[in-house]
Length: 231
Image (cartoon, rainbow, N blue to C red; front, side, top):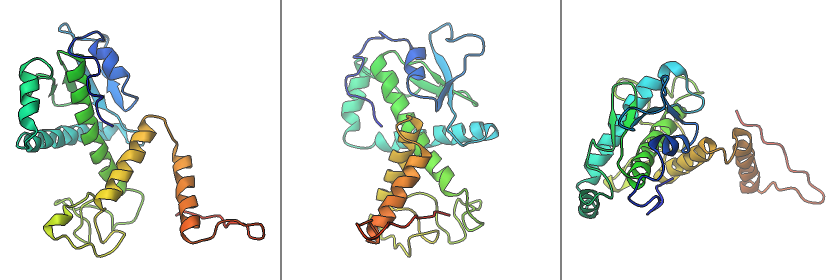
C-alpha cells in the first residue's frame, strides 16, 4: 500500500478532490457544501470500517501524531537526503506544504499528483497501523483493555516491538505483543478489506482452511474435513 513511483509525474493533471476520492471509502472528503477550497485544497478524514462516528476525531488525531513521528524518524535516515533534494525541485513538498491537520480533519494542498499520492500513502500507512491496534484490543475480555500507558494487563502494547533490542516473546496471545510479521500481515489484510478486495467472511474462511491444513485434517476420499468454529 504505497505510492506508485512516478505516478502523475510532477504536474497536476488530476484535481486533489479526485485523488482523495479514488483512494477508497476509508478516506472521507468533507465537502461541507463545496468540494474544494478556493485554493484547490481538500479537507478529509479517515473513517475506517467498523469504527463508531464518535471515535473518528480521536482516531484522526492519533494518525496525525503517528505520521509526524514517522516523518521525524525518517528524516534522519540516509535516504532522507535524496527525498529532501526531490522536494526542493518540486517533485514533492516541504513539511506542512502537502497536508496540515486542522484539529478535526486533514487539509490536502499538494502541488503535484506525485506529492499528493505520496503524502496520502504515508497517512494511509499510519492509519492502517493505528487501526490494526484499534481492532486488536476489541472483541475480547478485560485482558485486552489498555491502561493509561497503552499496555494491557500483561504490560504488552497492541503493536510490534523491535526484537533486535532483546524483546522476549513469552507466548502467542495476550501475554505477548504481535510479531512484526504478524502485524504486517494484519495490515495487508485490513488494507484489502478497505480496498474491497476481500470480505471478513472470506478472510475467516481462509483462517479456518489454514487451521485445518496445519492440523493435517484435510478432507480425503474417506474423511470429511471438520468445520472449524472460531470464537
